[in-house]
Length: 125
Length: 125
DNA sequence: TGTTGACTTAAACCTTGGTTTAAGTCGTAT
DNA sequence: ATACGACTTAAACCAAGGTTTAAGTCAACA
Image (cartoon, rainbow over all chains, first blue to last red):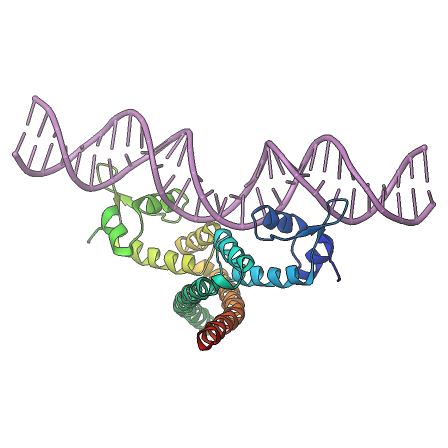
């Protein structure tokens, strides 16, 4: 089984090593193996878990929420309904945030239009 | 001219008064008037400026950026090109963030689908 | 007259999400 | 043998964005 070093993972995801260590300390990377020298070994499973972590982070889930999710993953099939509920709720939150940003974008577009017009009128004189 | 007290504005926008004071201290509310007792008086102009501030905040512009924008607004028509550039750049950033969230949402949807299927299969046995 | 209630301030405090630092341990190439 | 590069840790540090606290002012009401 192939293992990745922390620097490889950091490069792969373009994330500082310090962040990976921080996530580990925060409990986002349980089951992380170590070599004889105590160095972290990331398995393929860890990599795909990390992909999930990044996906949740990209959608602004707090570390504490991600941790809960990961704990449920580790706990196994008995937590699937909990995970489903969490993901459904999270999806709602994400859609709400996208909706809010999209709405606010209208206000920004309005300004852009107004400023462009103003500049155009200035040039016409 | 109608003026609003800090508590009225807080209620209107559903924002804590402390946040309004914080924004004022950070320079997001220049030209804010005061009554004889030193209490803040929000004019209609302040209200619409505040709407803009909230719009920019909703789209994750940092306080420092909002401050810069407000300063340009106060400075007047000479800064319109700067404001246009800023809003165009900000729009790009917002679209990028929406795109990233939308993309990550796919991963979340995948999990939802998978979990639902798993639960369904569990019930069928 | 005094005591609420709505405001004020400066300063301290808080949380989140990391980053940086200092000191140390390995394995390997010279 | 030693020196280098890749890793380790705990603890300190940081920035952003507020929130809370303590002490005070003022107007109006009982």
